Amino acid sequence: MTTGLKNPSSYYLQLINTFPPRPINNEAELLATQEQIDAIIDKQNLTQDDKDYLKVLGTLVYEYEQKYEPMPVPQGIELIQALMTEENLQPCDLISIFGDEPTVTKVLEKKQEITAKQIQKLSEFFHISPIMFLSSE
Image (cartoon, rainbow, N blue to C red; front, side, top):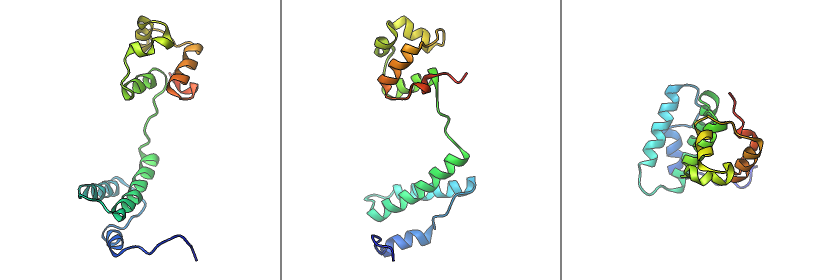
């Protein structure tokens, strides 16, 4: 007997019976699962059962996307640009790494290579492995 599991509520069982969670194997199943997720999210005042069910469906979507639609991981300059956008940084915010703003601009425009010392500083600044700043080109 497994311990720690509680009996599901009738509402949770209704969610499962209405749209049984199953591994996603194609685009049509993905879209149907996403529609179910959207329908639940559109409700107001989500219950814990709603949240638990969404977590299960979300896991299925994530597994499908990892297998069939993996997100490209930016590297090199593209990674720097993505991190700058994510953290709302301007070129002047990277002067401590590159020395001056014209150098930052040259690097971001791929007109100047990044040095090993700059890669190390980028790694420390963004808390990411230095290997991620090596260009895959």
